[in-house]
Image (cartoon, rainbow over all chains, first blue to last red; front, side, top):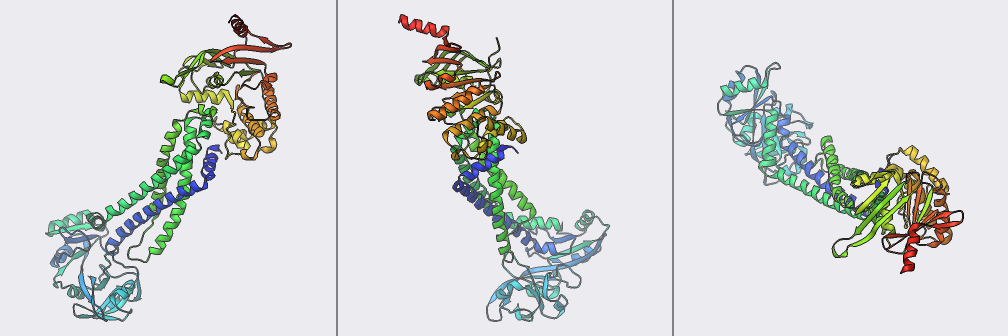
Length: 377
Length: 250
């Protein structure tokens, strides 16, 4: 094995204090980027969680709908028009809207109602941990997430409350269906959901379309758009992108997260560049000796770049450990930080790139080295 | 006559710029032949180290020509000069310039590593070089664990490990006591026995003269004398005779 790596490693570990400072810089930077990007992913997932869990090939929605939570309404008659389109096997309505939940002990809290036909599918609750979907057929039955029990002022399954002066009873509990708006989701059968949000019986927010296995989604979409006026027809992927774009970029939340990540990268680059430069200055005599004994510029650059890469790998491993801890701790919170294999790989590449970029200053310094200095020192 | 290993012809070197510019060498010619230990002597500021740097292709002459194994270095860029040093020159410095974070063997391997020699062969060569300087047992020692004399011997091993045809030593005994200085010069003299290698030692310590095959004297950037060792001692060259003649006239 070439001595380049040995020299880089020994140079790095020779001054432990400086090395620790380098690692702190990298870890701080990468943990910050991990959190920001993890929040971005977590937020991105949360804003599309309903779309992800809906049983639909195509979504029919009022023209101009910005996101899933946009409470525009459609005439339910359009559903029958949709059912008559060739290639459509099913079209089910889904309604959404805000309502006030009357806490049994007093006071109210806003809730987000999601209504669909429990039997024919659409958007029923998932991740049930207590109760059952069938139980939602009981008059007044609703499903809520167990993480919101305190917020709703109830103890658990069987607890009662009121929405719009109508008694509701919790007949099913879910796990992990949390809203990024912090407003609890309440699942109810279609008709009752309409009455909770004050929507007319012939209205709906979305029509979820299922197409025949052999049908072409694009063709069906064209037919739907041609046959039904004032609507938009999106695939689930398109609707997901639209919702995500609205919440992440329409509101500036995504830009803020990216800005934080960028700040982390800048801080990390500056710290690593500073410490690498200082380390190179400390070892200038050795680099001059290397040059004097005939080393090529490339050889010396490799030593410095290996120092940077080694710092990056060690720093990244520590940062990934810290990141994993944060991911675990936030998993059950309102806004979990998400870590995916792609993000991990991306962060690793970013750490390497950041450290190699930081090495440029040190390389520039070494390039100006005069090997004749070995005779004067 | 055999071709010199390194040769400087009419070398002039200006150092600094503007009002502070000085002529460190004012037209020096010197050839280093294989199998010969040349001692370059002169007072401080006479241009010894500048000449050594130019012969070692660390500095480029302002005027004049340097030939290494018959090839002129004129017009070569920093990378090409580094290649010439890598392939032909081994340096020994007054303050050793060993890498403190590398062991003795690794310090020696370094000179082979920059040449791209595979590590297995480099380890073997490093061990051989260590044995030549009598420090085989110090293979795993770090410079800080060695005496000055031992460090200089490691530096010599580093210079010879790459089979450099020219070994250029800048005051190699200046930082050592007389015993260690003697040991270092003995090693260098032994190295100079190799007909393929030229050894140049820059010094102002007269105690090293007995090891020299040739003594070249430099003053104010000019070679003012040259003595060749023969069976009967040193024979003064024409340069020195001329110099002495000039002195007498003066």
